[in-house]
Image 1 (cartoon, rainbow, N blue to C red):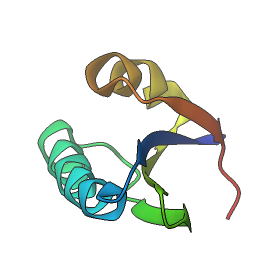
Image 2: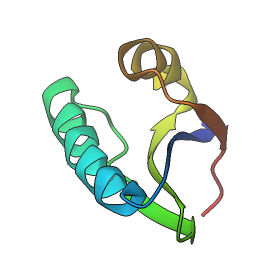
Image 3: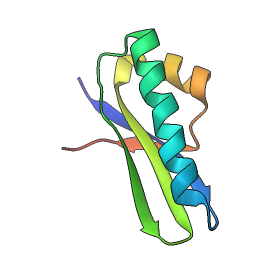
Length: 78
């Protein structure tokens, strides 16, 4: 089963703090909805752009997408 990385982008001087906080909510969602993949994280491409992400199996993507409305997604490779 293919895995997808759902991404939320945050920009500005507080982007890192916002992305870190958003990751907490992603972890809470994973627990409450019993999402099978438990991979989340925060990346900081530069000082004014950060992103929070979670990885889901392709068959779970539509439900998560509809609930959480990510900004974008891509195929996840480990």
